[in-house]
Image 1 (cartoon, one colour):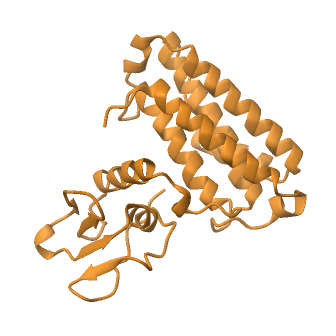
Image 2: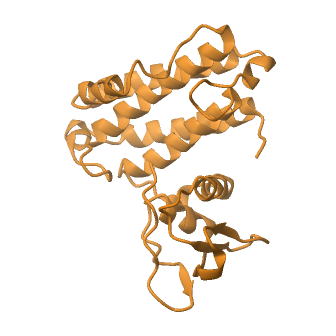
Length: 234
């Protein structure tokens, strides 16, 4: 799907402001409490989102300047950065997330048109895909924050793109499925359709279920039977 990356940055801005408003409703105790992600507090989620914004800034800088600037210094450094910031109080979390978002937005605004075609070494994507990567992180992890935002709050366009991405990236361990989102004229298929059950329902519910952010309670399966267990995603 081709989308103007700067137009998508408008969606990133709006999603980030929603996330910040939700975080502002918390307090220090709530930030230290468990999130919807096993093993992570809300502080982990917020810190991860701040550090991921900086990672996107690094990649945008690499695309614009040609100077190697990896997203993270190493996989270990990524984990250490999240752990180091997770226990901070709410005020520090908010300030960090706002500043990281602003740095990323500035880096995107500074991109000349040709820089968006830069192929990021080690990643099967162009720089133009980075705004989507950020939007996906903010929208999905906003749900993980456990502060009242759910997949039913996702836009239809976001849910459909997320659904298509999960289907397109499904590995050999994913169960075979034929997905029929309501209102979509064509099916989405994972694996061998000849042996696959048909799962139908709202686009948001299908995307949330495959992303591990929904139980699929409003989905239907044909032939009748239990809803398959989807492959782990992110």
